[in-house]
Length: 434
Image (cartoon, rainbow, N blue to C red; front, side, top):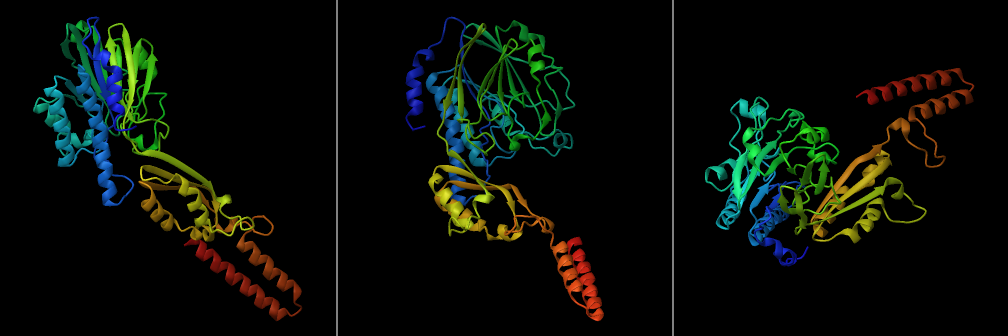
């Protein structure tokens, strides 16, 4: 997405910037901004650039909201990647919220699993206040913290009057380690009944939506049946999942914002961004996913059998990998190199992974090497290069010495070979057992 893309989107969407007389409210929905995310173990310069990109993506969402003059700006969890963001990220968000308030845009935020203290920390008094709660105390936004497991009270809605449209908003989030379906037995205070448009802000995994491995930080799960059964909310505006989705579940419209930047390789096909909505009592008038500036995500999978073809090439396995890697490298690319297949330990040590990492650091934004699918063959499973058959070094030793014993006619030499065989086997067993 170029620098002018958001401006072009604003021009294209300008007709809906006007306040509607038919009961439509306008919303910018964002989630999973993960400000402060510091993965990949990069060079400090690249870590700093990563932080800037995360902040820039969030600012694209706030700038869009201000330019459109929307009614609501909603952040549905994991604004920060930690419960203790640094002062630069805190100040950055404070400045963006001040701009929203000055423009007359009401802001709402929901606690996420990454930026909210766990239930155990809270009960033990070890948790610091959520970073979003400080903005609420200053009047910059309305904050919905996740309910602790010991809390059973009904959700209390915030009731707004937006151009004579009554809107009711509640927030529901889960904590790291929480279990069960928090929506199954949800109760909402009766004030919600007087709202023409009712919205639940949600930060939790939803049944049926793919979840990357890095997101498996809670045992809670919102079932689709509990969404179908609930009748309090027309709309569920959700975070947690990192790819944009718009679903109809029963009578409920579910919109998942998706992340504003790639933070891992779990959902490589999604385009990071935020959502621009027009909501009415009788349904969604528009739901536009707006892409933001982002790093490219590339994946390269190499089978180990491709690396040892001496008859076809004189290149080393490391050189073969680098040749495959070069066309993908770009200063704006995050690349995951995945190695799959079987290797002997000798072959594994022939791979110069440090050289590959250094090349990635120099020629792309980030390189992650995934060797979780490599299988290092145990000694008894080594494959003969000549016959292609598996053999055991222990069995080979026994066969070799037995052959020597059978070939000699001297009893003393036979006893010596037998003794040597037993000593060697004992030594091999001892080494294997260490």
